[in-house]
Length: 244
Image (cartoon, rainbow, N blue to C red; front, side, top):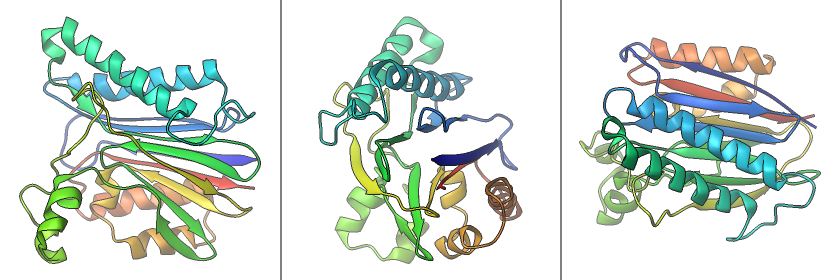
């Protein structure tokens, strides 16, 4: 059984919150989206994408064998349907033109197994055996272009294009989805977060927090406050899942 807790905060700089999440332990579905776009378009994109994917997964089954691993999984097909919905909405309303969002989802696939898919730079980490490991891959200029150019890690951390996404839901018809399957043992934790968290706090802080004796809600609140104490330049969203 999976237990979970999630929290989202606008941070210390931005007046609105373009992050959105859904956490449904009963259905084994956990979704996080970080929207972008002018006016309220980012908020609209993140909510539309999360709710569209959530409904798709509910309608097509999740953890009872209906979702098989691989490129043709229910989860990946849900991402494609979601991308279509966001692009359709943008094409019919000039105020939503150019909107997009990251999208990250964890889907329980049976006892001790989860599917994870992502677009953009919202991240999923696994905490197991006292160690933190990144499960997803950032689809950003820094990760996909800058690193290949041989730029140093310090330079990449401060590069003016460090926040530029190479892929987002709503940005293109040809969506490129990163997917991975993961085994989860009792006590393991999966952390989902927007870049308002992982872009501000070190992985050592994330690991130490998940390794503490705090409850799931206390860990989430602690991480959000730590990001805000470090300036909170972006919206901060955290969803923490644990197998019990």
